[in-house]
Length: 427
Image (cartoon, rainbow, N blue to C red; front, side, top):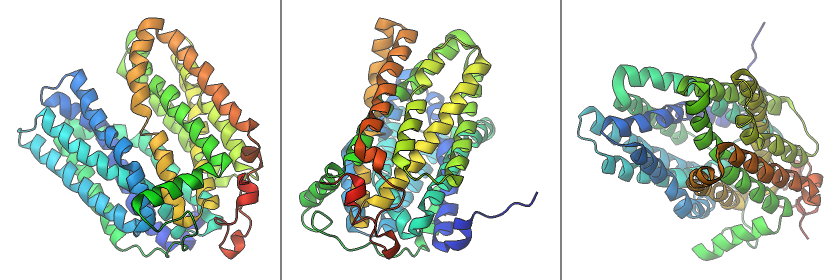
């Protein structure tokens, strides 16, 4: 069977350059996700210290994501990403050196992860806003699906690679590789030549920082489908994902035989995510947000699947289906934002997206432990689903969500993001 290169990679050389660099960086991130906890433990840290270091990398999202959105709409987005990659290269490289030389301590790791998380907070809005500047509007869904495919593949390949690296070279060696991937990504970004974003309109970039921040919120508030989607994603990240990050491992330790069994479930979810990305690449939905809302409802069943009491094989298969739904939702959601939100405001709008997703997730992670201790693990998992699935289905009750089309009016003339009022639920 002859393998063909995806059309978006053949036809969009600037995207190809971005895609290669970011793919390597994503693989490094997956390695880091496994290596950092072992790094904390290797320097004598406790389980609480592991949580502290993880939180240190997430808290900056709450503080700096909106700032990153304003900056990414004000300055060249690929330059912000380049600086972010260089900062993360320096941070991960320093952590690796401290670990390899045996002088690392938990406070060192926590402080450096704060710097890492701050760079992440600036990178993410810039990355979302950059894609329409290197890909034509008719290729955005394919580009997002390919990016999602790399993310999902990393869920499967990254932990295996990390395990081998940690065993052979220790956490320091694994993080040294992660640092190198940021340097490679920066090298590709340095050669990137995106087109310039469309000029701003009232409520867009220009003015003081607070005026620009308010302009971004106006773009969110004036689009009912965006505001509703952000609410649905906030519920998913605060209510559903703690079942995966906290209660799933707890049940695996108690009832499924430990970490090995949990890794099977996580791998199955990753395989499902890959399938979802492939489907998103090939699928052409006339009403993308309606399909995205249905996918989010399926994705929100993760908690009840984990707590179902079924066999490990059944749980793995069902979570693979939810993984496919998760990938489908995020590809459709990001493509809708990039299609219907004006280019000059896209990074600011996406910064609210990241704030209400990754930024709020620590709230759910902090609450799920005490709640499950009071109610029990399985009742908590059932309650998560009872909250999250109706919240996702509620999106289908929003007319602007159901009616949003795949292409904005005027897209052929390059004005689709600015003139999308009739399809985006604007007054």
